[in-house]
Length: 228
Ligand SMILES: [Ca+2]
Ligand SMILES: [Ca+2]
Image (cartoon, rainbow, N blue to C red; front, side, top):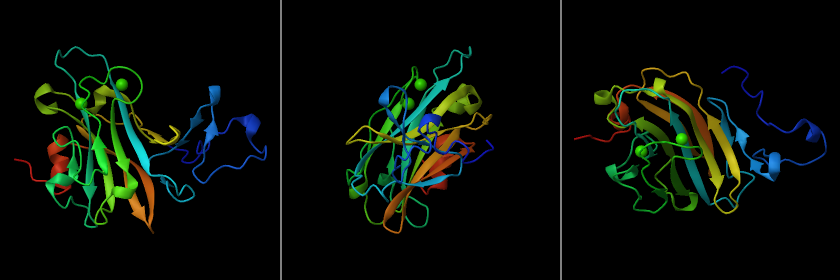
């Protein structure tokens, strides 16, 4: 999408210039008083802990909807987290958090469970992160969504809409950031949605939105996980 930054801070017009002080992670109060997060554009990076030093437990919510079609097969998308060292690889296979390995040994990253349909609004799968427990050797945590058994079911991200990632502060429920993926995918079967990463002792988030072919197996290869 063009216009990067154009909606960076979607402050209601009436409040613009009204002298309110926005925190470092810009927020606005939407209809009904809900605190809404900053809407990110593809490639945009934002500070999470800088200016919000108390931030500890965050929930990474991933959502999607499957377009109506008549293949008859189930359509199951899966959120995963790859905990990466400085070389961009998972140090061990235990640093790959998915439906078959829900909780990291450090308890810093917990997958909240597999959703099989993606039906309905809101987060379809969630991954909880305790930023204070992430092992020192982990520099980045990449969040991905892949289509289960995509090849044999002949499914791809061209059939997926309304995909997003959002991060909320678990202590307040406030949404900090949100990244809506543009619907510019077609034959891809895996998407690296976004990434948490360390920067000068702080945690930042990068809205990536990069599509891959080859599903979860391709991502595992990319991140150094051997697939049997
Ligand atoms: Ca799933
Ligand atoms: Ca959904």
